[in-house]
Structure formats: C-alpha cells, structure tokens
Length: 275
Image (cartoon, rainbow, N blue to C red; front, side):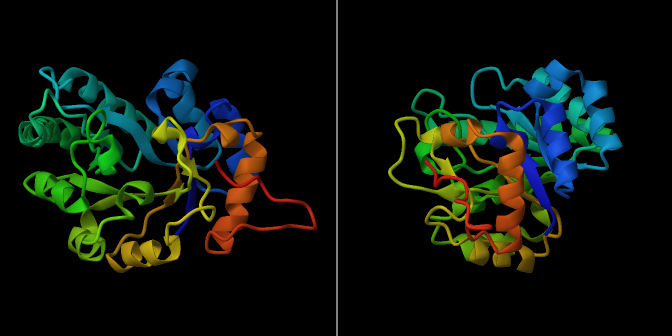
C-alpha cells in the first residue's frame, strides 16, 4: 500500500511544511484536517497539494451526530471541503453517548448518515464512518466495533468505514468483520497502542512499530478484503509533535518499508519510542 501521512501526526507543522516533507521523501498521500486547511485557505490548500502531486487520502472530520443537533449543516460543509480537495473520503466520527441512551445514540448515527448520504453522493464524496475504541464511547464514538459500523452504513450507497488500528485491534471478531467489509473499507489508518497510557488517552497513540498491535497481520486482513488505497499514519502524541515534521516523515518512510519495524540508521538512534 502507498503511504500517507495524516496531518495530525505532525500537528505543529504548517500545511506547506507537511506537503514539502512528503514530496521530498516520496510519500504520495496526505490526510488533512478541516481546521488547519481552513486556516491556510481551502482553495490554496487544494492547489498546494495538487502542485506537489499528492493525493488527499482522507479529510477529517465530520460526524458528531448523537446530540439533539446532528450538525448536518456543518457536515454538508465538510462534504463540500472534501470535494474541493479531491479527498478519497470524508471521515466521520460518530459522537459520544447522549445522556445515558447508548442505543438511541447509535440509532441517531444511522439516521444522520441517511440524511447526509444523498448530499455526499451528489458531490462525489464518499463518507467513511469510523468505529472507535470503547474507551471513547462516552465522548467521541458510540460505534465501538467494525461490525456495528457496517450495520449502520449498509443501507446507504457511497458510505463505508474506516479501519483504524488503534480502534479495532482488540476486537475478537475483527478478522470476520474486515472480510465482511470488503469494498466498504474506504480508509485504513495505523498507529500503535503503547503502554502505559497517558492521562489523556487520546494522546496515547505511538508510532507504528512501537507498541502492541500486529500491524502486519491487520494490513494483511485489510488487503485480503480488497482494499487497495493508502495506509495512512495518524498519531496523536505530544512527544512526536515536538519533533520536526521532516524527521517524522523520514522515519515513517523507513518503517513502512520494513513492515513497521523501528529502524536504526547509520548508528544513530531512531525517533524515541512513544509515548
């Protein structure tokens, strides 16, 4: 799979810095986030990525459907932004539990997908629902397994799923669910589960190869399901954010080439283990 670097992995770098690092190290894809794209200017961002010959593997994020307001107006704007960037998909975060009504919250995700899907189809944008690790159920993701995500996206054309290593690696039904997803896998994201977890679990993502996830095995499952898109590295980690974007991108290229094994190059220490 071709490599893509998600903008969140080098959060403190500017969009031009990320694009430059990817272009110089032969990375062919970038995963973008709406807020920094908006700060740079949507049209300028689209032109910058196009000039560099990069593909936008995903735009993050829409979703957060579970409250009283499913935020459809904002999600339509997100669809428009994804279309302008030529993004392969728009990533949708389900949203956290509303009150204590977990079943009702999940049902609202399905209802919102039904309302948003025709608009996305008209814009030529594919929607990718991201199931999230159960630790995020309360505040970010009431859809906890790939099987749940597939059930919600099934009735809607042009809607698929994200397979994010951090969120799905623990699932005992993962092999069967990835196989069932097939062509509905629209994005494949990797990082690693490292311990001990920090106080803010969101920032506990390690560089691929630094933790407990069998990324080789997971990649094999995704490939066997028929996915031929990018493998997108998305890491939320304060230690990584402190590093220059060029160093991070160079290290990811090396690890990608070796099946996500950490690399020692020329006698110099690699990037520090995370977190």
